[in-house]
Image (cartoon, rainbow, N blue to C red):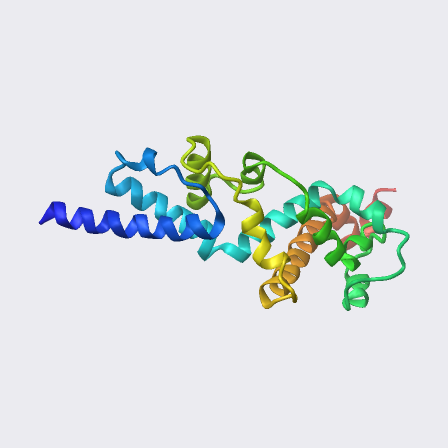
Length: 210
């Protein structure tokens, strides 16, 4: 009975792996899974399902945001003299962002996303843009480093969003998420220091000292 239950569980977890493997071209080496016990198969299936399915759009947004942050200087330089904008939110961004040097990054967000998403990265580099302390990322990293996953899954991971004939709802949500993540990073980088806050809230202090 126990053995039958294990076999049923193993068959289920392998089915989950089969679906993800086919959809994202992971090229799983099933020979390496022959001696993996039920718990190991469950962790692998749950981790990969979590990364590629449950957190799909969230992970794409994280990846794109990380790339934009890494290449932001080049992107800003590319768009700074372009008076055209590819977003209807220019006025909103202009109100929020005081540093006009970084403004082109936000007003050309669609172009910025298109630029970085086509960059070629290895699977190791791809994983480095995520927090490997997260369970699903740690499982993906383990599978890649131990050659359980042997394929370059990145194109198949991105294509459903960026190679659609029309921009779908997932794409629109990712643009919004990336914009918000970038703005949050901008806001943190431009937060005033404790000394600056003190001068703003107690302007008389320096006068009193004089």
